[in-house]
Length: 452
Image 1 (cartoon, rainbow, N blue to C red):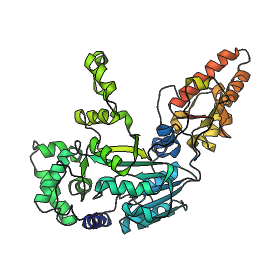
Image 2 (tube, rainbow, N blue to C red; image 1 turned 90 degrees about the vertical axis):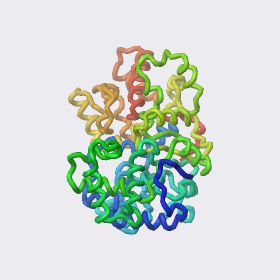
Image 3 (spheres, helix red, strand yellow; image 1 turned 30 degrees about the vertical axis):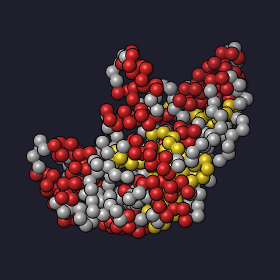
Image 4 (cartoon, rainbow, N blue to C red; image 1 turned 135 degrees about the vertical axis):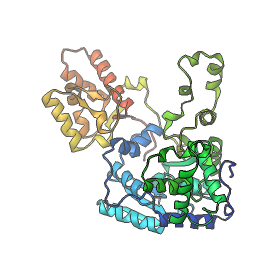
């Protein structure tokens, strides 16, 4: 698959050469270049969005516990993202593969240093995964697919080791958002700076060129603003990461869907779906425009996403989830099912089931103060995820395991004996639906569903 916006090279017809160059690139400058001993930042939101519980609930409305699950970090680099996946999914095993031996060595050292023994790393190309002999519940392939000579082969490789109920998260560079960078790459190739694997000399020359271009030169205006005022080492990192990047290619939404079709995978959704809502591109009141009101609802998911990238290509990556086609996720809950409290089981998000949060519940009850459950997950939805002491007492039992919706209503009634049962039901329902909107609690509809 080709793209006129990507820089042409004379090696694109030889996948082995491309893989060798990319491997050499990351052996020379492993990525990310964070010290092995550096801990993960205290970023609760990062853990939340890397949790299998979050991912499965967003894409399938399925409630799972990460404990015992098998996660593949395909293209693991130096293991920084592997470390995040392990921290976000206690009890899961993380396996990483990468074509850079230096990166695999650093990833192994990193997770061993941080005491995560249930992880392993291998030098392996993603296209070779079908021979790996394992099946995974979740595959993370971040910042990798667009490097592959044949991305469809990479998708097929991951599909071959994905469990029937599993999910793949992967991404492609956006051809539209990175168009100016691809022009810069083509220029540096023309100057001979990307013929071989760029090292310190080539990086230094490219940095001098960018710094000395006039400030009104288009490619500098569109690509170099982040470097203005930055330290020299950070500028060198920008050059190596983007301007002299071997094998970098950009794609569009239609090309992304074509790849999924060729690999026989089904699109589940964009990871950062909030940035891909075509309705949000219009001013308030635009929903009154007759043409849009008639046209937008008729567009397919692919067409709506393509409109977004044509009008407002702000996302560097086309970041998406996919799975085996026809995945049977079972019956999802709805407002009617909440009326039958015996059919809906309520779970706390797994990242909230721990001693720290349990202590927060107890302190809220004892000191009669509010508790911000969203804060533990790095989420901010106003007061929606903040509960009072009575709600904390009602929900405390979820620390020991999931409870039926009817059990929580009964608990609420016992805490408000003067309240009518119908009012208690309404109050408890409102509380739980508010918390579910932020995935603080997860609803499981009991019935015949496909097990994990």
